[in-house]
Image (cartoon, rainbow, N blue to C red):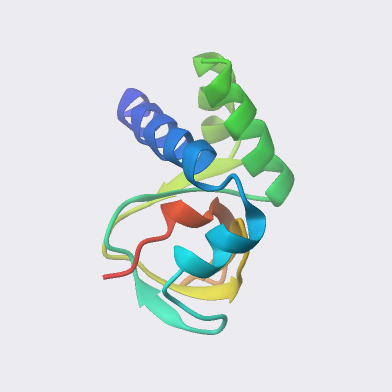
Length: 116
């Protein structure tokens, strides 16, 4: 299971690095939702507990440091919110803040949040 999650995180983080290079054009062209909107996820969404943890995870993926990625998952600093989950968009940007139905706040690269 950890391996599957790591693969999912690696794929999403790779596409995030490729797709989120320019702050203004990326946030306007790739996001099709608004702050305050409740959406249903069309894909699994890798998320982190803070914006700084998103940066750490991207670094670990870039460095192919699987042990550090697994440690973040084990420590609750990162998780994958499954496809079909309902989340509320709290704030937009290259890193999107979302809130789960449980009231937990998570942060994810903009390309990781895909609505149905």
